[in-house]
Image (tube, rainbow, N blue to C red; front, top):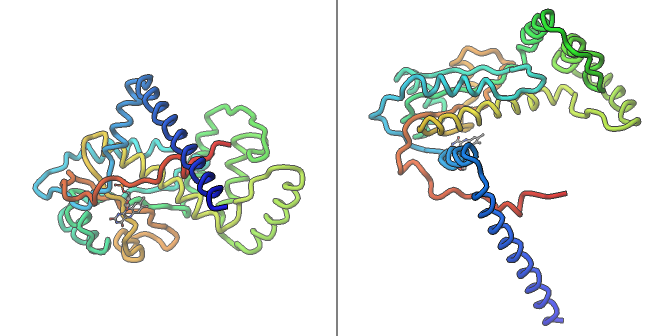
Length: 277
Ligand SMILES: Cc1cc2nc3c(=O)[nH]c(=O)nc-3n(C[C@H](O)[C@H](O)[C@H](O)COP(=O)(O)O)c2cc1C
C-alpha cells in the first residue's frame, strides 16, 4: 500500500515536471516567434511594479500623466458608458493632504503626482444623453440580439435606464427577477442585472482604465503604485464628490526608488490558475 502510494506520487510528480518542461520549451518558441510589439509589451508589463517609494528630488514631466490618461480613456467600458472620472493631484500641498487620506503610505507621500480614479454610476443619464445625441447623427445598423433589442438606439434609450436607474431598487429588482426567470427558461440570459450589480459593473470598467494608465506610465519610463488603502469617505469629501460616487483607487506616480520594491515579483504559476477547457 505504502509503495503504491509512493509510486502514484512519483508518477504525478513526473507528469507535472514533464508538463512544465513542455511549457518551458513552448515559451522558448513563443519568444522566438514573438513580434517586435509583443516584445516591447512584455518589457512594459514586466517593468510595471508596485513602487512603495518615489524619488522626491525629481520633477515628473506633465505629459507623462496627461498622455497616460488619454490612453486610459481609450480603455473599454461596459456599454461604452465611460462612467469614470480622473482627478489629478499635482501640487505639493494637494499631495500632502491626499497622502494623509491614503493613510500616509510612503508611496503616496513621496509621489510626484497622485491620480484618483473614480466610478460615477450616478452620471448614467448624462452619458445616455451623449450617446443618444451621437446616434442622431450616426446611422446605426439594426443589431438584433437578446440584449440590444432592435438597435443601438433602443439599447441606449430603453435598456440602459432599466439597468442604471437607481430609484425604487426593490420593486425594479423584483420585476427584473420575474423577467430574467422567464427568459432564462428559454436559454442563456444575462443574470447580473440587479441594483447590486451597478457598482460592480461600473468599478470593473474603471479598473481597466487604471491598468491601462499604469502600463502607460511604465511605457513612458516611470513608475506607479495602485492604492485602495485609503479613507474613501475623506477622499470623496476632499474631491467634493456626491455620496453616489465611488473611489476606485488612487495611483501614485513618480520615479521609483530601487528600495521602493518589496522584493521580486511573486505570482502563482500559470498551471495553478489557467484552465484549458
Ligand atoms: C486594487 C489594488 C489596490 C492596491 N492597494 C495597495 C495599497 O493600498 N498599498 C500598497 O502598498 N499596495 C497596494 N497594491 C499593490 C499590490 O500589493 C501589488 O500590486 C501586488 O503586491 C503585486 O506586486 P507588483 O504589482 O509589484 O507585481 C494594490 C494593488 C491593487 C491592484
